[in-house]
Image 1 (cartoon, one colour):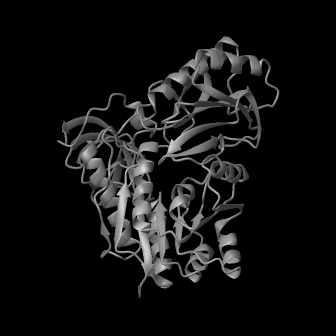
Image 2 (image 1 turned 45 degrees about the vertical axis):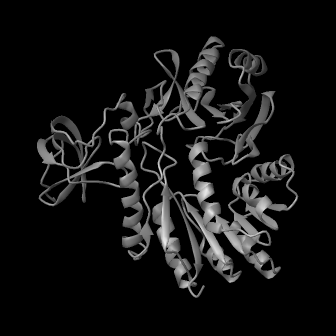
Length: 457
């Protein structure tokens, strides 16, 4: 049996030497790494070993012997336990530095492109209370309907009412909605037994409009007194203009089901972004930090250096936020998105803003792009803002085959971005600079934006 330099439940004193990309402290005992929550580089801590694995172990801080000058007070340690705000113990200037280093690290190690310059991360003046959307599980604890968040790597609910990084009006709305549902004796979902009724409460709130949507995710379609409950929610929370029941009958970790019905008001809320109005439905992708999204998109538009004669492709278009933001600067915008409801929203958003030079299709970017290439759609600029898995190889090939002057790449995952940059380079497109933007303060997530140009340009 293999022996390790530490054993489970052992308590030892260690020095933290680094942070993982997820913000956990790293200590080494005889070269064996131990990952420790709520620990920062240069700190001396006494830890209890919680788990010992083949390549690394996990520990818990029992006592701080010396603390880092970069540590800041965490109001509620549940923010760390649940992973809601895993960097909230690190001061904000250092969080921004940490994110810049993360991006530089993947460019060097994965892309093998250490020569690309990574700018300083653009942060927020007030790096909290920024999220415009919350998805909160509901469970019954001690006979009471309870909202909160899961402990990391588990489905044990920790009761919470102040989520720190969410719009405070959303936090208050969740509590108000939960209390209304409790008054109506609504049963909470029991995950293990796959019983009960209410699974999640989702709240979206317009950053500028303050319109609010409440989505009640239920296990069954029949919702006794659903309309009455929705009306009470609106009475107690006048900002609520939309209450939706989403039905998810599956035993799954996926939050939303396919079936929906409007219980009160509209099927959407509206909000503004860069001066344009956008309709946002329950399933639409919409960046959760409106203030920083404007910063990110402004940077992307600046890098694109658009001309009135340009034809633009907005791949992974969502509800059209990027494409419609640039439509009045260019000749035509073509966009695509896999979710039909989002494409409906994008088309509606074009009408809302009196935009007539935008075309949106339902489908995968990697399938539509080669089709457009055959039809001689010749974009000057391609905007890509893919999900965390990054870009499909066929999409990269099709985009480069169209020979645009610029590809503006917005990424929410530095690792897949670094992998994609290698593929772009093989096809003749490269970048010199990458700009990180902090859309998710207090967490380890970071958005980056860059422009790729042909090497001979």
